[in-house]
Length: 289
Image (cartoon, rainbow, N blue to C red; front, side, top):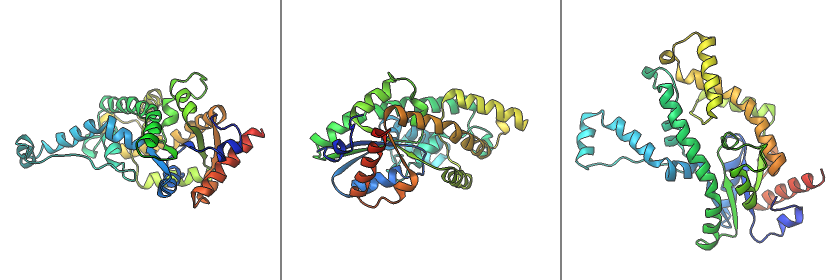
């Protein structure tokens, strides 16, 4: 770890931290507190994915849909209008909409092969965006003059790294540049996330082998053809199962590469000083075994 003691972190003139864990437990909440202080640069991996690496895919998908409407088709072909996504740190809907859900096209579903193709695009983009962290650390300091840096990762980081591999090409680079911090949720938090997801299911990225297994099992256990699957029903069914297999991967990342804090501790953070105290305590716990 780049900070091996509590004092090393607290005395660092340039603090560098990477937050990871399930979506909805406070990564962006913390990053917004730090950014609001004016001293921290907030690097959002999902925002980078949706703008730098998948922005063209997203815009082309919008244009493909617009071309189906005669009026919009004519305006697009004459360059009378343009179509673009409006991704922000707090609104990543264009990215998740592009990823889509597999199943019945009448319900907005994608053919499974197309769905997997977009998943693969996301994997490539996420790895690239994570590795860009080092570039943005330099950029934040040299270009904008920020003293401190927080990397706000997506919930799927554990799907694109091998947390058990000490030579993992992504985690090796990241751990040399930032302190990985896992926000750990309790069973109650997990249940709350599942309930929230049930109300508004959204596309997510999963490892291809996991998706292939889940898809095959869903078709078998629900006795349904691929083009008759309810897309929302499938992603709801997959989400709760995905959280179960992600949890140990997050835990291994924290054990091998960084520290952990709880979602309850995150909830109590109100200021950058609160954040620093929480991280310093996590480092001290690790150092103390």
